[in-house]
Structures are given as C-alpha cells and as structure tokens.
Image 1 (cartoon, rainbow, N blue to C red):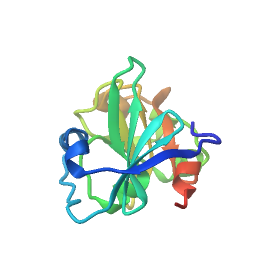
Image 2: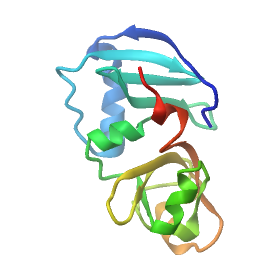
Image 3: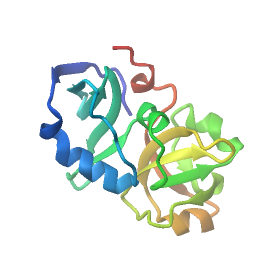
Length: 169
C-alpha cells in the first residue's frame, strides 16, 4: 500500500520517450489514449513511476513480484478513459471494504474479464455503475474469480480514498 509516499523527481517528458509504455498499456487494457495535446510529466511515488497528464496522475508503473515492469491506469485515469478489459466487477457489499483498502475477495466478484490470469495487474469496478474502485494484482484467473466463493481474488494496491487518490499537485 502507498503509505506516506511523496512525489519526487517530477519532470516534463516528451511523448516519444514514454511511447512504448503507453503502447503496452493501450494493448493491455484495450483502449486508445488520446494524449496529443496533454502536458506530460513523470514522477516517482514511493517505488512506483507515475505518468501525469495535465498535472493529474493517470498512469502508474509498478514492478510485479517477479520484478517485471507493469503499467495500468490509476483510478483517475480509469475515470477519464473508457476501459473494457482486465476488470473484475464487485457487488455493492464489497465496496465499503475496498474503499478501506481491503483486498478483494472472490465471493464479492460477479463478473470478470476471462482473459485475466493470475499475476496480472487488474482494476475493480462496481457492478451497478461500472466506476473504478481499485486496482491490484490478480490472485486467480478471470473464470476462477467468478466461480470461486471464498478466498482472496485480488491483492489491492490502489483504491478510492488512498493517498494517490487524494493527491493534489
């Protein structure tokens, strides 16, 4: 979890310098990031790398447990761009727990992208409105998340109400 981290080494960056990161992100989430007119910056946030679009953190790059770099949209980025892949949908009962930073349990998941495999970086949305609530590491595949009724399905790393969400730059 992101506790007491601060933004450091904030610097402007050209689109061509982060183009591979953005291309991988677009393929991973199945979206088109139209950032041609945006002011781009990179910054460190703890051990994460942030990409800021017009001074708002939209992309976070983290290392998976094997040490490989993975990127996903932050919650603010997910709200700004429509994304249709790598999601898990939870019912209303799971929302208060997720907003307190709890990991997502399989019993609360009612739908998920079937392309998710264990170890993927995924986002969690509410079933009723489709709004992003959290992002985290998948502990189960998409089909297993739906079928399973107990156990941890997603380890949360960023959620509505955490320090990254509340960040004002």
